[in-house]
Image 1 (cartoon, rainbow, N blue to C red):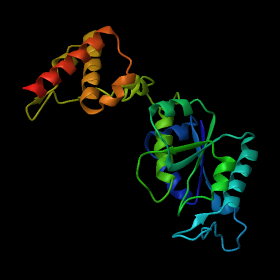
Image 2 (image 1 turned 45 degrees about the vertical axis):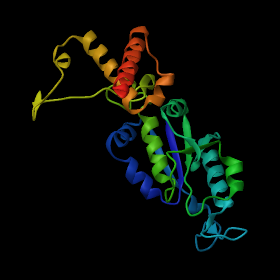
Image 3 (image 1 turned 180 degrees about the vertical axis):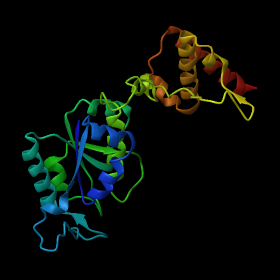
Image 4 (image 1 turned 45 degrees about the horizontal axis):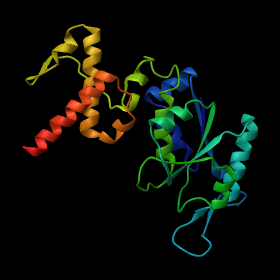
Length: 250
């Protein structure tokens, strides 16, 4: 997987991604990322890439030409026209399902806006996907791009040391992850559940699945509509619903 981040602040991107799991994966060559400075493509002698908006208003708008020229040069270097993901609160809210879809791509381009945004003509010409990480406004698209790159990369084979990790974490089968424990067995009177100490893999698996269902029911019930459950798990979920109803009527 190759990531290209079109940005006015390349150091912000490279400094953020060159650490921890993502940095190690890049060092191993499992993934690669490049921060491409849009400012390198301006023809303005002072290096400006923005101007006042037509029609008036506060702030400045990034110009279409340096953005489009940056992308076209990138396409020539890559030898293809990869998807361009524009970081905007107006886009689809990014989630694990979208991450799984994007992880199948060979190359991905992230376009990071600043100021009051980017000239609409550039967006019409090059953007394929408008994506958001939530209903709030940030100063630029770099942080959302890094969030998405981190999430997508965890689904790329070889990034995680344990290939099963990505399958067992939150949102697998549309369920939140079960609680995790490590040493000591007793901390301030709080003990590790006995089943996790039993060494009985089938019982541990079933306990974890039930805990995932319970946690999802309590914290993110909206996810359960598309959760992948077997017959016994559906019965357990119905039991949780009945217990909640009884508690509310008491």
